[in-house]
Image (tube, rainbow, N blue to C red; front, top):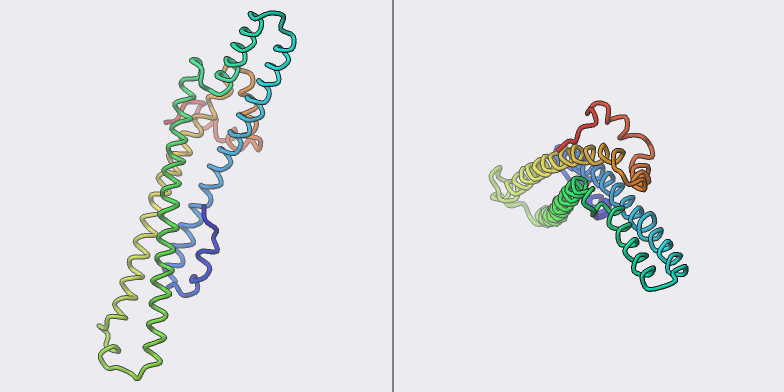
Length: 228
């Protein structure tokens, strides 16, 4: 996500209707980004510290206690098995694995939409600046009867810019809403499956993702069923 200061430079120059669309769309984008960032950050923390770090520590202890080659091979097999199971890559976690990759696909889709949004904002900023410069230059020149007519190029250009900006922001808002709705549904399904997994360490992931119990309060309304 790019910083919101991108929009602050030309915000005051926008028509009121475009400002409202920009505020609403930017807010939707930021809220969804916060949700996805929360998920990715805590999943990364879980993989790094609850899976890899703990598994490696156990492997080192077993290697030091090994008496022969068979013990070394057994310790290594146990190490690999632990990582695979805790990382939702084992056979018992295939359903969760599919949901997880669905979430990743949605996150990548959102990233593309966010890039489109801020590229569009940059383009709008550039065109707004150019339009303001042209207006300033026109005011400094002697009045031209042709340019002051209602159908002049500059007047129509500003109207067209406002119309296109409004359409672009409305479409982006609808696309972000669709991704947010699908993401919430799939994520709630993912959360609802964690408590019934056999591996005890997945409870740490559940705790990190839902430490405020926000999703736990939503789960009773879904009956604990997987939402896809």
